[in-house]
Length: 92
Image (cartoon, rainbow, N blue to C red; front, side, top):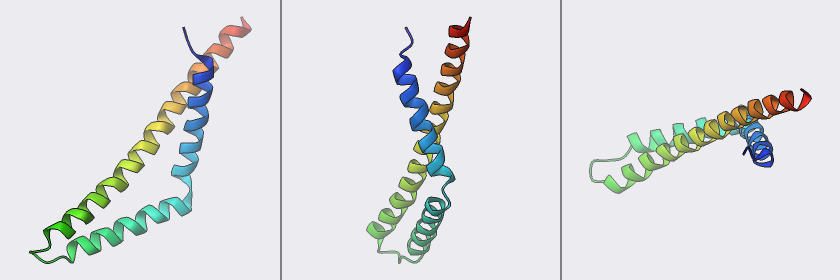
């Protein structure tokens, strides 16, 4: 059985995630942070292994957040398609 309320929730979350992905201020923040982390990472000296690891992890986390937003947006599109199909079936 299809949970229509869950589909509505997923579709709404997907739209919000897409809006965040498309937001120029958030995109700028990601790019600025990533560039800063890369610069700091590249500027570490050989004995500064912990600092390099810290910046590497920070860069990875930024990528993880981007991937999560993309996943939620994609799931929302799928949920919306299912809702559209349900709406078509209900009109028959």
